[in-house]
Image (cartoon, rainbow, N blue to C red; front, top):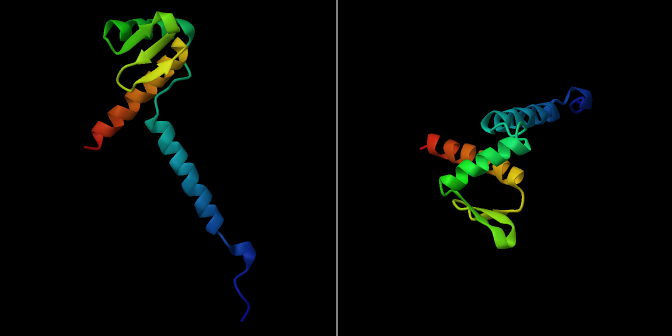
Length: 96
C-alpha cells in the first residue's frame, strides 16, 4: 500500500493557521502605538514627569522610565514604550 499523498498533507496548513491566530492575539493584546506623533508624545511625557514616572536627566539628554529603569533619548520612543509597558502590565494583572 502506497504512503499518504503529499498533496493531501495539511499539517503545514494547521501550523500556519496557528501562527496567524497567535499573531492576531498579540495584536489584540497590544496597545495602539501608531498614533504617537511628536505632540502626543510630548504631552504624555510631560504628564509622566509630573507623575514621577519619568525623570529627565538634562546633562545626559535622556529620559528615564522609572518603573522599568529604561533610558530613552527620544520622547516618542519613550511614549511608545510606556504605552506598550502599560498594556503589558495591565495584561499581567488581568491574569491574576
